[in-house]
Amino acid sequence: MNCKIALIRGDGIGPEVVGEAVKVMEAVGEKYGHQFTFVDVLMGGCAIDAVGTSYPEGTAEKCRACDAVLLGAVGGPKWGHATEAAKRPENALLSIRKDLELYANLRPASLRPALADACPLKKETAERGIDLMIVRELTGGIYFGRREKYMTEDRGEEAADRMAYSEMEIERIGRRAFELARLRNKKVASVDKANVLETSRLWRKTMHRLAEEYSDVAYEDVLVDNAAMQLVKDPGQFDVVVTENMFGDILSDEASMITGSIGLLPSASIGDHAPGLYEPIHGSAPDIAGQDKANPIATILSVAMMFRYSFHLPEEAAAIEKAVDQVLAEGWRTADIAKPGEETVGTVRMGELIRERL
Ligand code: IPM
Ligand code: MG
Image (cartoon, rainbow, N blue to C red; front, side, top):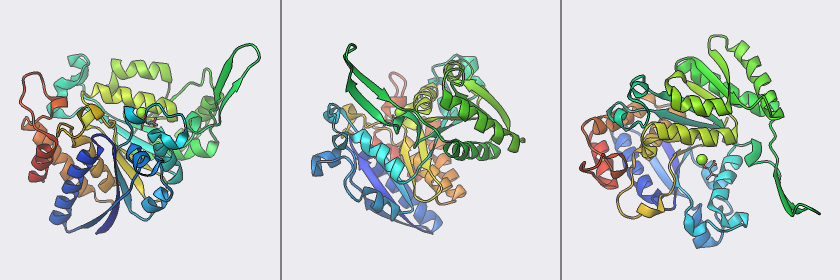
């Protein structure tokens, strides 16, 4: 296979973790006879510094010319105060998701066997296992609705953000969730706030229609406040969790926390057309940038997702996941997942250990 991959190395630890992921891809390519070509794409805070905008002209076109996009991390306190959209790294993230129509964000949260004791929940809860997939709607809702700020006569300044969802948007993300559940444990929990929000009532109605169609999949509605509670009380009950953009943003951070390390979790953002975008869930961690301390595993596991969902290479994906599990089982740890006093390895060494086990 011949694949072209856009690399958005980004800010903070982004370049370091992407560097290790690229080496893993090259090792897989060599072993399984695939050819990977890489194209660097400038986006995020580094783009603001270089060309004055976080999302330079042509960014989406450059990515569209590739089969998949790998992103490290964008943002950092250095660019945290800007109000103008072009000067905000996060704005580039929202723009690329919209431009590439990446409406489905898959965020797995699973407790890796070797790290079960990193789970901050009760021992009995961890023992039950955690293996859930959050399917977050990524190009609609309040993050993309009209934003307003205006002066009122008697209440000072006022701001508003509009949350809108169409049946089409709900149906396509719903289908993704049900299809995924069929490949997993055949359970879908749809999270909404239908006791308050009109968008949620449309969400629920649409999901119920799909649930009838996918009658082989067990379905339940969960209110978002209850979902937040259930995630820490009994996460083992969930398989696929599908929800709108903002609820998914919040719940996926919560889900990542209960697995013990955000440094381990990958994500995929996909639409109906190539390319998909793959990135670790963690941020740019500027405090440890450039020190060979970052954990490259989340980015390396993002490559496994890329192989599975964009290149349809499940065997290669599984080989990467197995190599990661093996390194962890042997006791190798980066600082973020080490227990006090435990010996640690750096970013580059961790990457190397994983490659050696492929
Ligand atoms: C995420 C991030 C982004 C989001 C921000 C940085 C715009 O929190 O990927 O979850 O909210 O989608
Ligand atoms: Mg987030």
